[in-house]
Length: 193
Image 1: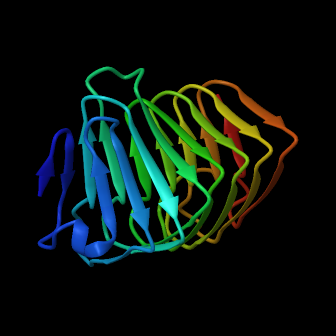
Image 2 (image 1 turned 180 degrees about the vertical axis):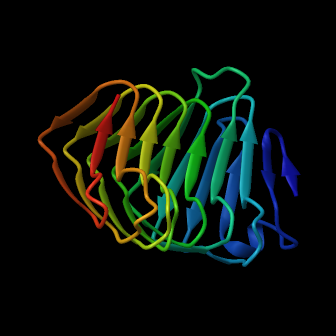
C-alpha cells in the first residue's frame, strides 16, 4: 500500500490494523497495533517530507526487517516518534533515518534487535523511556552527528560479542537530567568519535 510519501509493505490495509495516515500533516498514528512478520522487508518506508509517528496504547512489532526506514531527499528532515503510548519491537533493525531522529514522550521496549535507533544526522530522546535487551550484533543507538538525551531513561543490555558499541556517535553526546544504564558483554559501551 502506498499513500503520499509513505509506503506500507504488507498485504493488509493499514485501517484494518489500527493505523491511520494523515498525508497533509505527514502523521502516522498507531493505536494498539500488532504487526507480525518474519520477512526482512521494512514495514514502513517514508521519503520526501518529515514524518511524525504518534503512538497510542500498546503497539507490538515483530519483524526481520526495520520497523520504519526514512529515506528523505533533504537530510535535514526528521522522523519523530511522539505520544503517550508504548512501542514494543521484537527482532529486526528497529528505526532508521537518513536525516534526524527524535523520540519524545513515548516508551520503547526492544528485544533481539541488532540496532534500535540509527540516524544519519542527530538522535534526540527526550521525556521518554527506552529499554533494550539484545543478543544480536550491532550498535543499539547510532548517530552520525549528535546524540542528545534530555529527561530520558535508557536501560540497554547487549549480550553479543560481535557488537561494536551500545551507543555510537561521530558528533557529541549530551546527557541532561537523564539516566543511561548500559551493559555490553564485550565492554564497548559508548563510542564518541
